[in-house]
Image 1 (cartoon, rainbow, N blue to C red):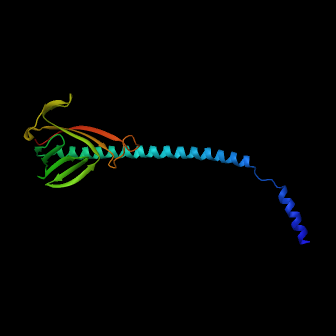
Image 2 (tube, rainbow, N blue to C red):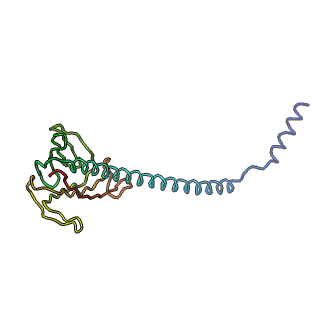
Length: 185
């Protein structure tokens, strides 16, 4: 009797339909198209995130660096040395000698001879020194004598500190400029 039940179960299995090879291929093709679309959307989201994060980084680096330089230069007692368009030394209100100097893509800040990295990824730092300056026209008399400096125009361009390749999502730049009138000189 048990053998008879087994015989009847086998034909019942033969009557059940499975998927044909054509149906499986169609489903796999549709699934491949859907997954490819999901992959493209995910890649674009990642690229957008990288662009945004890099843009925030370079803008924040430029803004915080410029704000610190402006605050310290505004309260400077005297400018002591002009080392070129990317190097300035001055005595601040506490009597400390502060120096800003661009070395490669690193902006260094020294206090009484002790150097520390302020920010990396600086593409350019341009300091223009004026003995007289007209803020309405952004023009003035340029000077190379530290004792005559009344206004310093700062222009900074920052890029990513991580060194992104040209044209990549991380290749962002920020340019900020400001003029600082020295209060105590």
